[in-house]
Length: 383
Ligand SMILES: *Cc1c(COP(=O)(O)O)cnc(C)c1O
Image 1 (spheres, protein in one colour):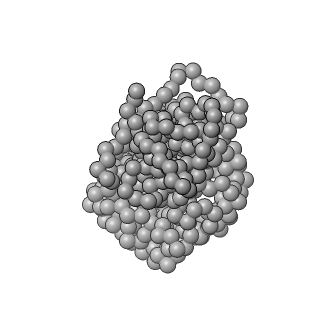
Image 2 (image 1 turned 90 degrees about the vertical axis):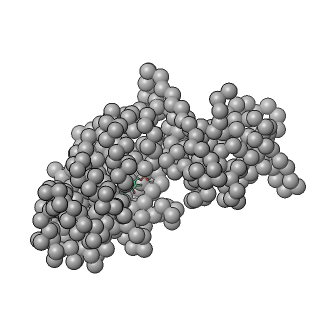
């Protein structure tokens, strides 16, 4: 039997998701960049780059992985609130398409480094639109109190300084308000803010040729089988309808979770079952080191027994990992067929922010991944 735990990726579902994405932006000037931080598994990156998406990177390491996986430099955007000088130089030397900037000081540093390389940097400003994404507080990024984006104070100062910066060209704006967003009205609100801010940009900075609206579209963690493909149609419809800017300006998206979230699962084994007066515990060989989201965000993941034949009794279990932390718990009072030592458990919707967030805490090794794909691709009815 295969050694557990491991990540399992269904590349057929990933390809279907990508085809669905493609069909929803056909005939528009929308361009999707995959947010590499969601999952940097090589098979996944190569599958996505083959489909012609760009890459959204938040470190020099992610830029390198993207280049190695076939993304072309001009289709790479480099974002992040704390880019190091080395990372900026690496991005400039590799001629990545766009750098998203989040502070005045960062822009001054980029100008200086570009001058040193005798080149110029094409940049977009990440503005904080102060839009509430109505999601978990730890994955909200577009509110005033969040660390992300240029503040309006710094924007004013930049307007004064820009004429003296000879090695940066500011061509547009970038936004990203948060993650696991289901309420489409949030995106309508974002579009309204963009419609207000673009004329301001044109007035004070110059010609506006680039818009990036970020990512954040949510997936159904509760019913991954019923809803394996996210609501791309509704999502893109919002931007088609609510943006009033010149339609010839390309609109870039940075989707992570919605592209890869449902194609992965974590397979793990029950090490021990124990009972107390109040509860049953199932102790797994995977823990928060392989899937951090429940410990970090109280996130829900569907938990199943791989052989889900329900002969006989179902019981409630707290499903916990082996790590020495009380937060190392995947779910409480989960109803499952009676578990015994050696049973295989699948934790669903682990394609995004599981393997890429894995840790070596408690002296644990990184675990392997397996991919499955058949050559024949069956499209689900939804698209
Ligand atoms: C994380 C991140 C994304 C992707 O978010 P998802 O919720 O996975 O779509 C996009 N843009 C930026 C700037 C990010 O930090």
